[in-house]
Length: 113
Image (cartoon, rainbow, N blue to C red; front, side, top):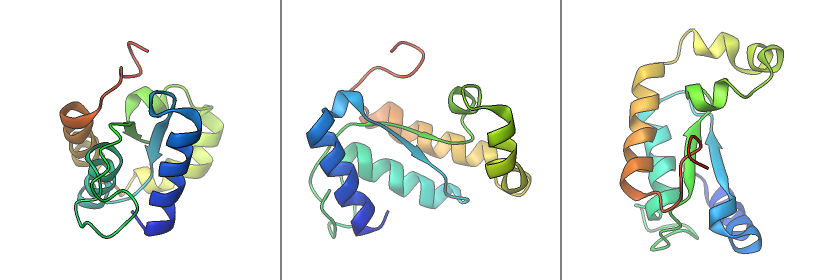
């Protein structure tokens, strides 16, 4: 996650409260999505950005997570994600993001929110 996005996430978290923020990722690779998930839950592991040492514990999902996909307008999802979904390692991405969410998230997940 680049430094500008880290800054935005931190500012939104401060403005609205971390319990009111859900981060939706869209990266096409499992490892990159996991790194972003770790950054918004446990802090920037590279210690280079605004979230270095800042464990926000935010809820984080990937756009291909069933919990998110099920609430997005199907036509919009198909237009924006459909083609990429065919080439993305969906199961790996979901598992990678879930690992960090379950390990470091401080707030209720979508199903229980």
